[in-house]
Length: 339
Image 1 (tube, rainbow, N blue to C red):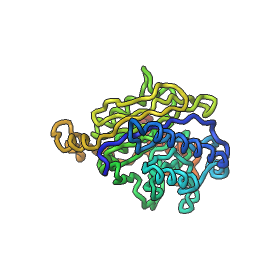
Image 2: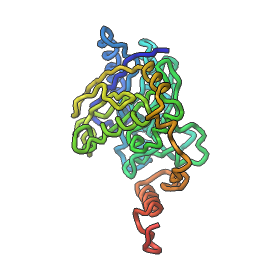
Image 3: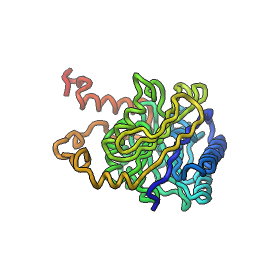
Image 4: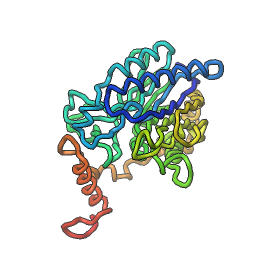
């Protein structure tokens, strides 16, 4: 077990691929970035955890599941995770991959937005985005699938501590990140493609706000890597970067300047300090203070699971409309009254 090491957010800026044959170029560049970071910082820092952003391999640029499956989806593991495994074996590191558009023969009608934790022995965990950025994303959530048996919130006990990950929009749901914390996560990893105007600069610096809040409320380190693609590379959005590492009190340990472009930001992860504080603290220990029984909203249905696949923009909006009626945001069309 390593009590202290360094984590690196490796922010990318690639043209968006239109076909899976282009993914290999991105993988080779990310392996080069990882190797340059490990070797270049070696006289100063022991970089052992490397994190890449959401959509680093491919983005959902087509407007149907059929076209995404035909052009961009890949099974996981694959030759790209094999390349990361070889790198991890060479340098004794762990790599949290940028996300893939994943197809799985066990779920032939759906696609997932998936990131993997890769080590010397291969894929250690696979996380599928629980809260897709609807209605724009057509990926399915494990929540949508009847009979889904895998743990939607895997936490891996590694030599670098207990690591949990969630993807981008997941972080706007405190319940998702808290689930990882209650499953033991000490380092919360964010693989993200957070676009303007919700970036790293005031007045709407949601990126910084939520990263710091999730760290403080769960007494955990946050390693958050954001997409740094320029507007022309991943339209219709621009991606502000600002990748960052936050400590368990919400202090920013390191952050890339806001703006597009390849950037690497490195900061220490001190597990001994984290564990000592978790053990020592009685006040501001929000997990042990949680009165879960009094918060009954999670026992109510809000956004319904999808009842048909593949997903379309229209069926997603129908489900959102129902959730808005359930929550009282929209009046019920039959009565004209809020529910």
